Amino acid sequence: MSLSTDPTDDGNARYALPATLIACLLRGVSGRCPRCGEGSLFRKWLKPVDACDHCQLDISGQRADDLPAYIGIFVTGHLLAPVIIALVTGFALSAMALLAIVIPLAVIMLIGLLQPSKGGVIALQWWNGMHGFRKERAEEPPA
Image (tube, rainbow, N blue to C red; front, side):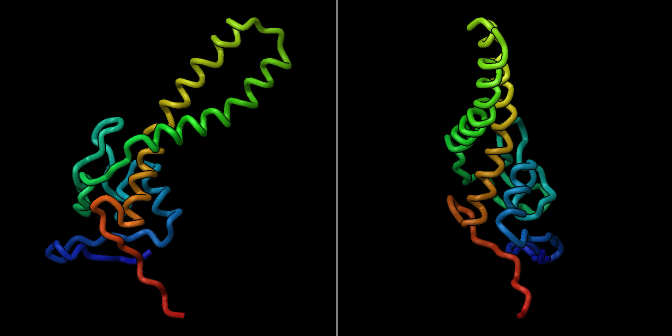
């Protein structure tokens, strides 16, 4: 990671830029600012902050509209498919019993995945310089 200073700041705020896309995504998924990794990305469950309280990155331009929900549905479906198959083939459950197990599980999983996937999408937008973000990269070490 490289220490960087925000050019709009007075030079006192220092933060470590992520070295790789994976590091950036991990910051977003964990709900932290993709640039500095210190500030919180969300002020409420799915409401991003306007700016990072640590590095002052303007996050208000992010456009993580429907993609986090699609990611959550995709992951939930793929994780629940083997569970559903195991329940259907391994147990003599009625359709109502199966639904009583699967629907709450799916809802809980989807709700749990929404904020991390939204954070990851915001981090991806920052990494690629999309929707008002400026592309910033850690300096490459000399070869």
